[in-house]
Length: 261
Ligand SMILES: [Zn+2]
Image (cartoon, rainbow, N blue to C red):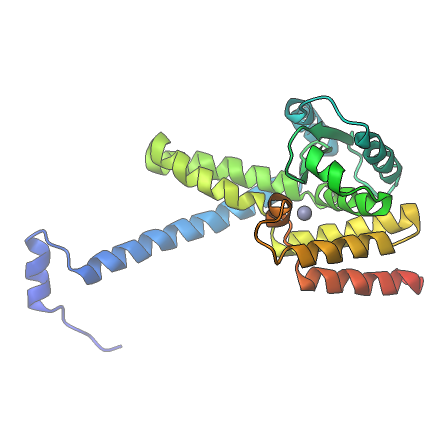
């Protein structure tokens, strides 16, 4: 290794208390680097814990969450969603959780899974998805997030990140950072979406024996995604309907139609 002597003028500059732009940049890069490593480590710890929590503990700790989030009295369309949901949760494939469908009085179409077995659907979703098989796919997809513990892992990450970042930045700065990170966490990773799709599709296919409704629904979603003023924005931001997901679903349908696992 070649020895590079430190340049004199730089030492002088440091002693005068001034930092060059280069040094400032270096400091910034190392801070960002440390935060990035921290973020990855937190993710690994959260996953480690989330994958080991028993269904009993999950239900006990998070079970009440769905009741807290429920709002307004459900419209008649909720009945079809409940009927569809009840049929899906009869499957023995599912992790043993107290599954419950709840209603949220919100005009934006949206559906999401809450740890502890809860699935929430909004008024907007019920008004838009009226086809039973498409509903089965949407609900099955959310059950897929439960099956693979995606929501549990997301919550774990969010909690740990706010704890750690509050410790680093103090409560105000930490709140801003953790708030931003949490928002980002609302969006499941592409990998999680593919996993939830495959699970939901198989579950809906096994329960209803028909797949065309879901593909048509997904194709419509994909087409509408092109329009930025769509009412679907909230749902689609957390579940981007990509070509890749649609292709994977089509392939899965072909496989299931051939009777392959
Ligand atoms: Zn999803």
